[in-house]
Image (cartoon, rainbow, N blue to C red; front, side, top):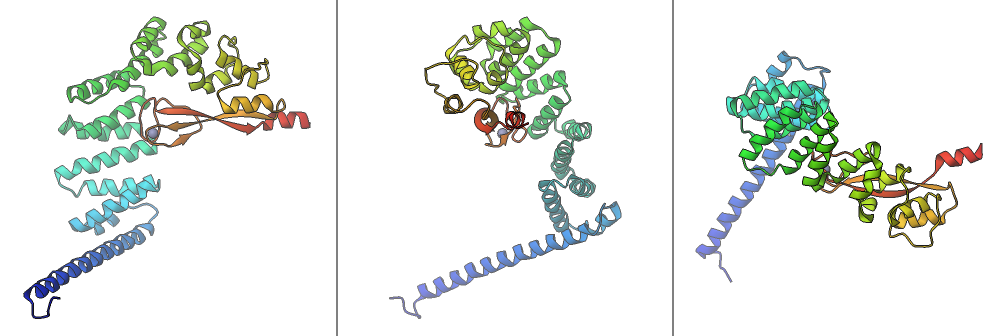
Length: 325
Ligand SMILES: [Zn+2]
């Protein structure tokens, strides 16, 4: 047993006191910070639109600037872009040159989220003027330019990323395909698709409306199931493979005794005509967000070709209503 007079006991007590002091200090610090943010939020909530004068009364020291920065981030997170932007822009005038780039990146992001693409672009170009290889700014600029259909500019950004040895193959093939699609250059489109198999869905979507006959040279049964939404909704194709036979059987257009490997199609085959239909949703394999419409680029994480289609059996409301009337 350790006696009270033992020096080891004194050391343990001493260390314990230090540990308790650190915990209490940290706790009080975070409490103070929370109170400060709460107070600032209350202060800012009083104003529908903040003007420079009001913010400047708060922007006195670095601690207040940090608190305001957190507050702007909170507004940004809850989708209140106007207030968030207002604060970021005010902070921008009160921080040093290095911190300015972080705030400008935030400004660009909020402008982008609010749909002001040209403003977002301006903020990003301002960062890149001083830091031409800033990856975060380049990444967002690529997305902004994609929305603005600035494909030539996108190619320039890709070149910089390649110099920085960042893997941008998906972005590269995406831009090449978009450009060829814009020019409606069928030969080029096929050539690009053959080189980059990740473009399969994009190429099939193009073919289905432009040259459906050629589709059968490019797909097998697994492809049909992987793009079941396309083939289920486009029903002018002949049932040339077993997957298409299963889709047509599920829609009661033809009959088959062979079972479908897709559970949802098999269920539809056994339900009375017009009772149910298929709906589709798309799960991003990168961020797991779910969307009702297909997109080549995930709106959340911006990853390309990351959507996986899921079929869902739904009640066929339209046909129900028709038969009811
Ligand atoms: Zn995603």
